[in-house]
Image (cartoon, rainbow, N blue to C red; front, side):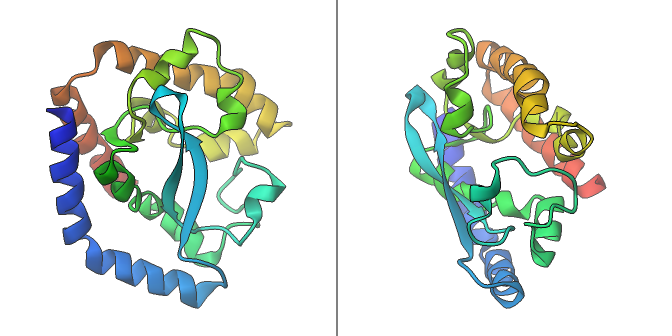
Length: 196
């Protein structure tokens, strides 16, 4: 049922949001050089790598200068990228990943290999399910960039505090996952974006 819901909802979303996709794509191209989409390797279900779709919100090759974005005004973020990130528009192309089966609408956020390699055997159970566009952990850590901006060493703060906390929340989701809770979480995500 979850997979069927993902296919129907993501397919409908891609069709209905196509005008918004086109508008954001034009905005990105007019604002800075580089591609419209940013495709980064993330780790998915079964510990397998896949390429995630996102609207590009940073200057090309920014990930070579660190994987963590700190604060609302990271100099690598483009002018359009600031607003694209603020309203979570950069995440919308992940509907493609959901439709083709790499991701689900709801599930633990997919991480890069560098951090997954640090997981304990118990934490690796977050990879028992498809990663999601939204999750309870991402809602609770919606101000993650601001938290990291205040840290003396953002990468260390992420590894030692943020990542373990998010994984604990995600593991609880994996143990209790059901479609009704997913639907409630989707509506909570919309509410959070609208009222932000």
